[in-house]
Image (cartoon, rainbow, N blue to C red; front, side, top):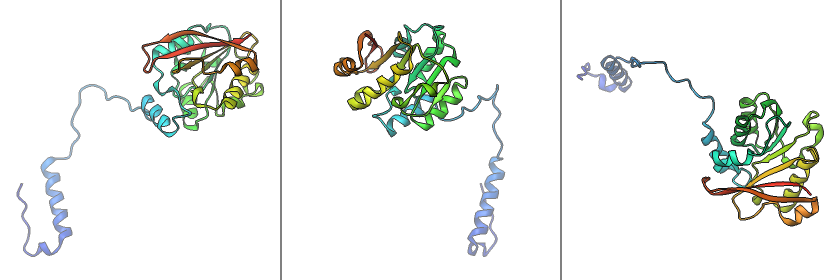
Length: 229
C-alpha cells in the first residue's frame, strides 16, 4: 500500500496518522464477514465452571462444590423421594446438586437454597426463580425464614472438614431443628470418615451411615446419611 504525503507534512505527525488510518480503512474495507446460520446467543454472566472456580479461589475454605461432579450429584440425591415434600440445600454454590434434585423430580418450588455468597445467591435466584433462596449462614437458618415449610430432607454441599467443630454442630443442629422428625441429612466428604464427628453426633442424638463411595468423582468422595437416633 502506497501512501503519498505532501512536502512538509512530516512536521505534523497528527495529520500523518490520520492519513495513514484513512488509507488502511480504504484498503481493508471494514465490513463484518458473513456467517452461515444463526449466531449463537450470548450467555449471561460467566460460565458455571468459571464462576465456581472464581468463588473457590476467593474462599477455598467455604466453597466445596467446585469439584462436585455429576456422579456425586446423582449419588447424594439418590434416596430423596421427589414428591415427599420440601428439600433444604445447604451451600448449593453454582447449583450442581440443585439441578440433580430437579432432574430427580423434585419440584423447583419445593427447594430451599441457603447460600452465604451474595454473587452465587443472586445467580441461584436467576437460575431457579421458583425456589426460596436465603443468602445467609447455614447455621443461622430458623423455621420462621422457611415460610411455613418443613423440609423432609437436607442436602449439604458444605465442606464441613474445613469448619471448626462449633460451627459444624451449629449447622447440623439448625438443619434438624427446621426439618420433620424423620428427615435425613445427606453430606458428602472427600475424607475417610463422616465429617460430622462422633462427639457432635452424640451431643445431637444423631447417627451416620455411609451410603456410597463415588470413585468417578475427582477426587473420590463419599456420601453419608445422617438421621436422628
